[in-house]
Image (tube, rainbow, N blue to C red; front, side, top):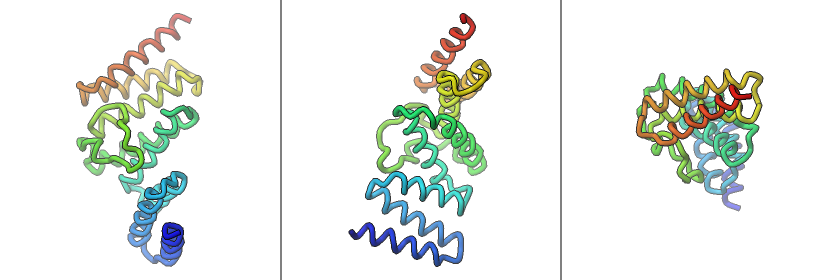
Length: 187
């Protein structure tokens, strides 16, 4: 009951806020409340609101991207296009903000603590995610030119490998891309 009351209060405060900085602060507190209650649709709504108020809010961009990645990786393949778009968008912001060398573990989201595969640094991880999404879209037939999308996958996952050569997941997906390319060539 206390959380419901807090959510109502934050919504009222947000409606009355006169500056984007105050709106952002209120949304961050509302986000914390929804994280405590595990209301993932509301958490996504907070991230979307934060991005609307501040399109460069790196934490919100990362959270939204991870949300779609977890959905896709756990069996809902319709979101791979969202993963690719969100990873591309965040890659630009992270580069502009000088975040690419940070450890991915610094960006952990409460409720998503499980080890997510891929490189350990943020920059290589974003390339890996974007490449994995392209691979999955090609594998699932969600694109018209599979060969082109497999090439995009190869480019991004290889970039992740170059930036973080010790990432086993990059080699694994490079192998999967090579097998998929071979399957296309053989057919």
